Length: 323
Ligand code: HEM
Ligand SMILES: *[C@@H]1O[C@H](CO)[C@@H](O)[C@H](O)[C@H]1NC(C)=O
Ligand SMILES: *[C@@H]1O[C@H](CO)[C@@H](O)[C@H](O)[C@H]1NC(C)=O
Image 1: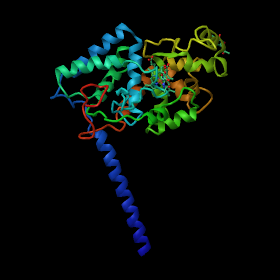
Image 2 (image 1 turned 90 degrees about the vertical axis):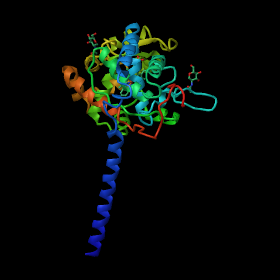
Image 3 (image 1 turned 180 degrees about the vertical axis):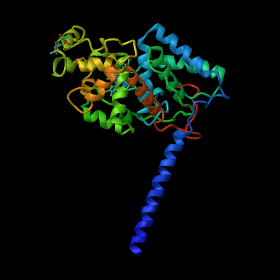
Image 4 (image 1 turned 120 degrees about the horizontal axis):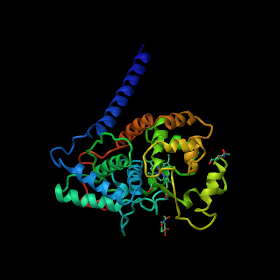
């Protein structure tokens, strides 16, 4: 009886602990809200939307680059704008990490937005919230779905180069590696497939997918041949190829390309290679609305990864360095 009672009590403690933990996790992202700046900077969204539209009409690819910045921010110690911090003599940022070095772009667009917002509402809108609004506006302006962006994140004073090297997925990933990289951040397999649909826009450097053209079998051979013209077996490392057949349009073409063995990255094609995600790829390929809905929901969820709230963090006045 005593034993039963004590194990009951430890079970109770355990579940009380789990409850507290889940309240803690909930409440940190629960403090984000769509109306966070409604009194402190009511017009901040129009500044962001205007700047994103201008940047994307100058160069369509910029929409893709800006969306990717939010992803590379959120997967490394949460959405805290750590990805924007420059290296200095005594600060190591994330910009030289393998997935980021010579690859991330769009920092100047964020700088422009930050400068305008600092003039309008000094010290109010965080760089991490800017990234999150910019990601949504980029998708919308390229014809993709919209979603309600949550705000109230603060900016880190730290960066994590090791996490940038280990938490972001590699283009050589197997399906099971992709599943675990996303599951480590709380995403289901279907959410991982939906988020991968971001590769419906943008461009990739030859050095990233070369192996796939010369040494991979799950690729349509005429597709591989045509890509080799711009991506020789040596040289041309920075030559760009589009991630799908309509790289400036946020549609569901990416998934149709996968069904036709025309994924550009090895990791893309892993989503349709006889494995457990084939069915989801077919659903998204045949139903753009379903993809749009799932992508939007997964983006909201991505924006909630470990936000810094309240006194944890700061609102940087320059996104490239801590205050
Ligand atoms: C599923 C695992 C993923 C892998 C392995 C991956 C990998 C990559 C790589 C290697 C590049 C090209 C880098 C270069 O050429 O320098 C790239 C580009 C891109 N990625 Fe991903 N990515 C993944 C998921 C995502 C997600 C979840 C998003 C956003 C929600 C995203 C958005 C983008 C975009 C938009 C581009 C094009 C960027 C541009 O044109 O500047 N990716 N990705
Ligand atoms: C990053 O890119 C620069 C310029 O191409 C290169 O010199 C440097 O070695 C790279 N850094 C790392 C860590 O790969
Ligand atoms: C590759 O794609 C072409 C269409 O461009 C198609 O005619 C061909 O059958 C495909 N090859 C294979 C092996 O599926």
